[in-house]
Length: 356
Image (cartoon, rainbow, N blue to C red; front, side, top):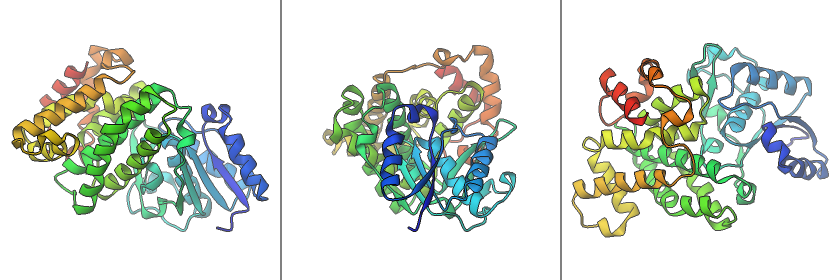
């Protein structure tokens, strides 16, 4: 790819594990000069991305490598863009507003969840504490590398939360009534099947390399699925939890998923039935109503087995915060519009209350 001066984007926690040292050594053996950036924060703030781009520009890098979870990959995308084509962040939030070209970009996920290595989206936390996306085909990488050995050291709770995040991507890509299509449907169904089969083994035995590999591939499929369709209400309800209470993205999705699945059960019956038959062969001849309920029950049961908080109260949310969260989520109509069933202000309040 012609990269001789690489900018390696990761976070401090991953850097401390020593994985970045192996990556840097590998690059240096090929006479690639490496500038390391370990300043990535969860739900990457605009300021952090700008500072990383400035550091890369000063080092005169000619390629960017994202190495880590979704926040590192999202940051790497924007650094590759902003170094080559400087532009103000507040002018590129939305779809197709970013200008190119960008630097060569390689993405290497170390979690099986976000699928960010194959999506044209970077989600940024703005100075006003809003989550806004930059959506552009310019953000798709030149190369995505999936190496299950990089995920072996993930703690069970992180494995679980990122895996449920991928599950949500796949479910919501299939259930959006606005943009789901044949390509996204095929990828989403396959991702749900693989995650349902492999997530619990990966959580309970972190050394299960086959389960780890299947989860990485499923995460990639789910990322491709929602890139071609969209995500929906679960993500909308999760975003305020991340912004206001700094709940990790996968966990915030998991906290809301069971409640929104049950809320959507009747409206999404045909789609949920399709997924039920995909994950449980004994449902092949069941009615839509039976298969849909079995799917929702199966996913809720899977979430309940994950080794982390199960209620909003367990992550610092107080009952008095529910009305604030409700006001926040109602502003995210770009995602709520994809839900199979319309969500009224009263519904939103009830969903957060139910999750409390």
